[in-house]
Length: 106
Image (cartoon, rainbow, N blue to C red):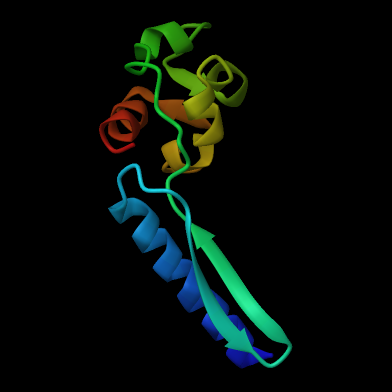
């Protein structure tokens, strides 16, 4: 079982690397032989294109307390999806500094 997990981890790392390197290419796949059948890893771009620049911090901080809560983050789907990453110190809210860092490194 452990060799399978190692191969799976390597395949996923490879797939992630390849997905970042591609631009507009159709999905691809890699096959890895396993004792109980082939492991197929499909990779490529998601097709998602952001619709424009991120909103200003003040637009999302609707209660004006200087941070964005998870419920306020719902106003910007990308931030809501990435909330844990944006909340670098894991305090349950995104400060202006954290938001600026997150928008600079999507």
